[in-house]
Length: 423
Image: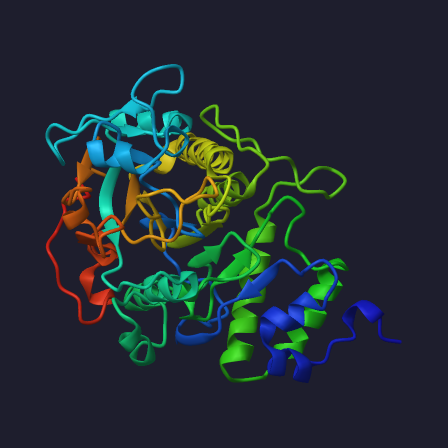
């Protein structure tokens, strides 16, 4: 008699894909994969242990980086926003001043809740690229995110680029096996085309299917002898999950042992903290992870921004600082980039919020980063300097930053100057 937990046919899994098929099996709804097409799909992990790793943190919703890294004494900034939507120059909630040569005579400061990032900046491990983003003028979340994850500059290019930029980079480097993960319930478009990518939202309960070895054999048997991208990706995913699960330390009762972070790191129980803790644990397994993706939502602040934004900045900053402390043994080979699909409008709206804008800011963190600097070109905030007369202009294409981390060849039809992000 077939156990109801495993009444899933091979045909269903192949037709619906592994993400759908495995989600029907109790205990595995949090595991997905990116459909094959560019790279990956082999059953045996082939990534190189100890190789350089890129961690991408995507702030979903369009982060108000003029309230994260603010030109506090700019008269146009002060005139456009009420005090609650800008960083203060003095008083108990004053921002943290940043030494910079991006724009002489302007006092740039980090939001007070971003104090942990200020320490990384002052220590030379964090660089900030302001007025960065898409050359395309879209203010649509979905279009902007798709453009950035595909690694293109305009909507016309989307039909010519099938895979995501991360998948192309992994393919160029011949990475397969457990080479890429998304610390979420699904994989981003940036990994589309890399068949071996895993979506692993949490490791605290392990990744083994319910039923132990017998259940694993049943799942493996569903794809034994099958061919095609879905079957190949399924075998690769099952192999990767087994590899990860086998390295999780367990208590005598078989449960996964609580994670012991290093360097005094404390991960809070929120999206950023959980995601970056998962990435840190996987890095320490030395399984050849080359790219990790972490999504952090909550940045679409059309209304009631002051409290929401402060909370989001606090959670993000503490999570980034915890990850940096926890991964101290890997500072020389791990680089992190933080970006969002666009910034917010310079002027606040009538709902104590900000609407979709254009230029934003990117953060790059790691031991190889030439940090303690603000890079790019500051366009100014006077009306004639703004994009469409209302938004921070983009002077640095987001691909200029990513190209220094993964190579310009990953981004079709793009050439640009180097910023000097890495030391």
